[in-house]
Length: 216
Image (tube, rainbow, N blue to C red):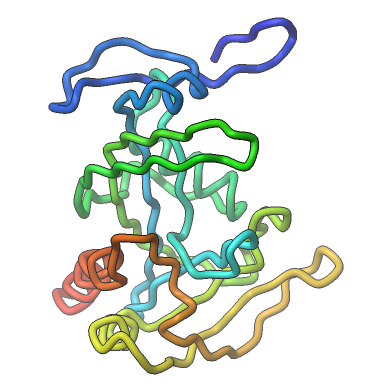
């Protein structure tokens, strides 16, 4: 990571559309010029067949366990471990993370300040077995409302039907202390962007987890 005028700048490795490495560029330029780069979507699951979603504070919706850019010179699995630790405060053996799929993600949107945000990303989706407890998460309260644990099979059925709700367990912070409570999650609470469907966005992840557990 390089610094300029006393400010820390984040650099990302860039590629052509076919994944050929081209070099590295500063993150803002990557999104200004629509340069292809890597992101990582991190998923934790447990031996009971549960999957862990974060609740995004900005949208109040369920999303990945953690996610973010892959920094210049960083491997995908290293980014997996870093994002899990940064966003939900848990150290995981990222070498045990397994590839689920790689998606091409394209998005153009105008920000409130007039900046045209142009995203061209290879979204690397990885899953990893989690052997801890909800009480061990120390998530970023400025970005997340909490973490929700849901049964993968039940979640898949709700997303296929595009309606209904399912029981889960939520951890949240109360005066910096982690609390755990039962919760109910409806189909509408899953984060889905324009042009996507919930089953397209999360289906392969859930199927991966179900297959991993069924084989044990």
